Image (cartoon, rainbow, N blue to C red):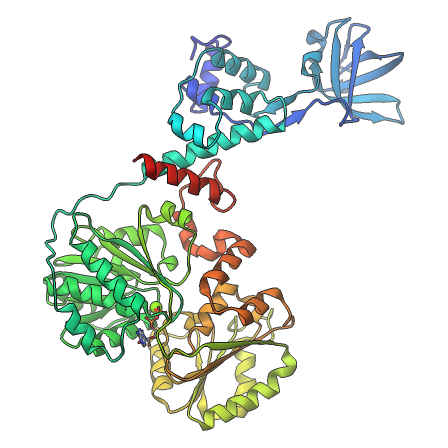
Length: 612
Ligand code: ADP
Ligand code: MG
């Protein structure tokens, strides 16, 4: 550092203590903000000539007083706590002062003073401890007096109209105007995106698994109690044939709630298991795990499948069986990712509702697979650019169409006035042996009228023994029991928190009432109503709120397209909420905003791909 003009031993030490060792590091001390010294748009800036030497006074307070001649007017100035001004100010020189006029004392209180050369400039402010901004300016200026190598390919810069790296640094530190800053930022954003793409680990070639063609898939498909949709069939074949290639699977199956992702995943799982490899299916809740296990055992009775969650009985035996290869398919919660669970020959990891898991959990379980084959399932469409940053180069498969005979769900947004009518409708439905969900946002919160406690009392008087209650504070085994009895009962009303959002699959569920709907996100409401129409009965979802004409609810009434809905949600709430925990899986960025800069990221990615 000391080879740079303006850096003495003292500055060098100060820089080191900030972790700044190289010229590059200095250039990358980006300004925290800019102060402008444009005379016309800031009435608190004055320009004048110093007419007397300044006077330093230490009486009571430390202050420097001086007078500036501004045209034919003399401005008396005072600067507090800046004794060094006494030595800097030169009589006869012109200065810019920023401050406030004290009309009472008739004096201009100076907060900042700059030589005239700053006039009409934007000055970068760094706020670095121990080193003054003007020193940083000096050092950077000196570094920028030499050429700087470009790190981005020329083609990329040309395509995206980017300035050179040297110019970008020049403009970020010494802009002439706002446009300079924008152009510089644009450069750094692309640079960041570029390195992000370069940093995504290329998938390693297959090393362990030997997967051959397998014709029995058709037999399994034939045995299903329903016909696969075109999309389902196509995706199963895609994935199975991809698995035979030299790279392991890294596929994401996107599809709206109820589009039938599970069976697609299971068929691929069967393909792996039939070649002697284990499959692990990780899901966010125990209820969903049980549900999947039941589906697996019904659809594929020959497969040795087992449940593993933190609350199963004989856990150790199950874990031992997994390790010794006595089971083919393990279905469970995040517990599967724990160190204690070892596999015999894990071929494939399937992560359902992937947006519910953080990076570490996903990574831990994927690493257990021999070649790290992974398949993600999600009903929450994530913008592709985001996805790449989260999951790397993933192949995305989308199920567009819902299974035949799937009844559309009618959504109706109403106010609380409609409640008694709805209760009567529920009574009618119960006569026809149907299942009804009533969903509320909280268990006993005071913020909402319709929490579990209150709603229970309201419903109890109407439905008595047909009423079931489910929420997250109940012990796990009780939750399980409730869901089972509700499912087995000929009819019933299940009062629940949003925990039924994923999983529960009851074909005779026809009715849903979401109370205090404003407390739910748009995607969440969409996911919730997806619990209906699972069989061939029509579903009606009442969304009850104080503001039934809210645009969010209107959108729900209008469209059943989950992609449209989650896109809207993304704009309304930002990615943090939508992606939940996955947000923590996004790489930290200095310049890029994954939503705002989505287009720029996409363009950069396209060029990246074309140049690879
Ligand atoms: P999701 O994509 O939301 O996970 P599921 O896989 O749970 O949806 O499927 C929803 C329901 O649709 C399940 O009851 C499943 O058995 C059923 N299903 C899936 N595929 C078909 C199909 N091709 N025809 C009829 N029903 C289907
Ligand atoms: Mg599902």
